[in-house]
Image 1 (tube, helix red, strand yellow):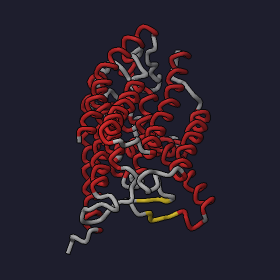
Image 2 (image 1 turned 180 degrees about the vertical axis):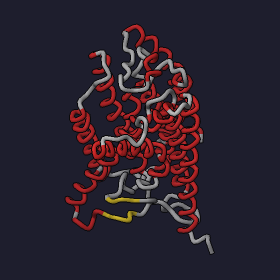
Image 3 (image 1 turned 90 degrees about the vertical axis):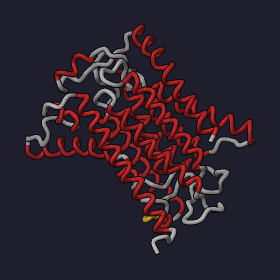
Amino acid sequence: MIALIIGILVSLAVTMIGTPLLIRLVHKLHYGQYIRQDGPQSHQVKRGTPTLGGVVINFAVLLGWGASALYRYLIAGDVPSWSAVLVLFAMLSMGFLGFIDDFAKVRKKQNEGLTVEGKFIGQFILGTIYAVLALVVPTKSGFPSAQAGMSFIETPFLSFEFAGRIVSIVLFVIWVNFLMTAWTNAVNLTDGLDGLAAGSSMISFAGYAMIAFWESYHIKGGSHQGFSYAVSDPLDLTIIAVCAAVACCGFLWYNSNPATIFMGDTGSLALGGLFAALSIATHTEFLAVILGGLYVIEAMSDVIQVGYFKMTHRRVFKMAPIHHHFELCGWTETKVVVRFWMVELMFVLCGLMVFYADWVARSGLLG
């Protein structure tokens, strides 16, 4: 518990102290955000707002977890787990890709950074590295960092092992790349209003912290009663998820409307990569669709808008992603953000209830 508190305090301190320092640096370097011309005209006043705020979020999670890991090593001799390292790799590598995209935008002085092909290639390479290492690197717990299959909760309903070891790895690489691409782009699309991505991410990672914490107390081989989970080092995953939630909370202090800094792709891609990696590490890839329900809605609204327009040359929404639709319907930006936070909170609560109901059913407590 002390390790968890240390992680929380360090992550919060890094964001609360580091964000204003970054704002001053970005102002000095004139690295301001360039707003898309086809977006709501009310957003043009945000042009020049400092960006790259995701740098602080990434460091806050890393240093928060690092301080916690150092405490556990000094007190009990616990070494950091490979599961935690790989999840952090997913976050930091996607964040670095987003940083390259953000840096290209401010250097070109326009809202176009990496090409779609360049970003996809980068995501594919990094996702493949994570997928392979998650399957082959041994962990101190004895449980793999990931399962070669698709899971709703814990047990794969579709295992790739039927195809043999090599083919199963290839199939898993494809699956992980789909998850990484889907969640990074979904969070990136959600990052369109002041505080929307930061607030909703704070809620979603708090949900994952609760799931990982429950798994840590019901780990296979423990002395608990009821269903157990063959998850590698869930306590480490709990600390990472909590640090991410706290980092988003601290960043929200400066990112709430009117934002004094944006997280940029550096933050949104990192948070999406972390969300995907946590779903894989906790064996809840399909439960994540509920836990990240707001991200799904945002992404699907964009897919529906583009697909329907290509087929009919007509629009379903006034503008996509869907948060812009409600803006153009007359909702204030703050109202859209707060209501979307409420929607995400409802999704997380539903996800947690489904997770607990699954545990109760598997534990045979329904009578």
